[in-house]
Length: 306
Image 1 (cartoon, helix red, strand yellow):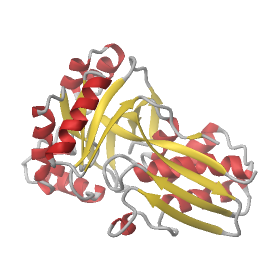
Image 2: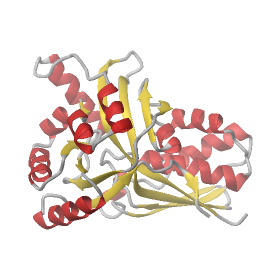
Image 3: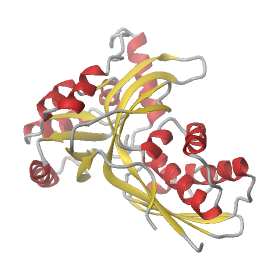
Image 4: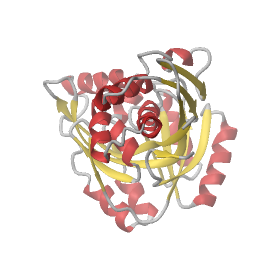
């Protein structure tokens, strides 16, 4: 086999409840993931040792610091972890082509790691089970297991414990990236600070049932009313311009809008595909967002494409 290409999708957290800080340094989460049609791809080919290149969205200029091409990259770490687990040499040339912006609350790095696991499993012939890959994914990062699973899933623990759930049909969204990337640890830290100062309630949005019910039965207005993200307030505190971005989306006709994950992406829910295309065109012309994409979900997780 000369090369394997795999791709994995971005995610939107349609529900994100953040609990207290755990002794291991993570927060307890209860989240509902939705995989959407914005994909990064990873090409794995034979090599001598490991080599990694990254092209595409957010990889030039300042973005180079966000997407390294050495052992700091989750793709590199995924290769080393799978090789060690399977007892094979970590020899591969890896090329990442990004469409998911870095540090945007869309799990782009996690998607890359999941695609790398799938591509290298095929390239090296390790024949890892799905359970094996999920175990490795959980070691790499909280969102990596969902990037493997895709679709719609309930996440627990620090997000790595994923359980697929049913969803009715297709959900259309517009994703608007508002400004430069936000640090996920910084947003969590701001949440803790605001709670400690009494500026945010300590009760967290643990009940995901309203979102799960809306995903099962619709319509979009029901999902719009149920969207929740405990990280939205701290993201707005760190990036006040996000408030303008959220207002722009709703004033342009979105059924609802929320910050995706730790931001700075705004996910605007639409009635259908045509509505999403119109909304994307309008928001792209307003200059509030640096990148605007119409997407849909749920879509499958990491898969070999060729």
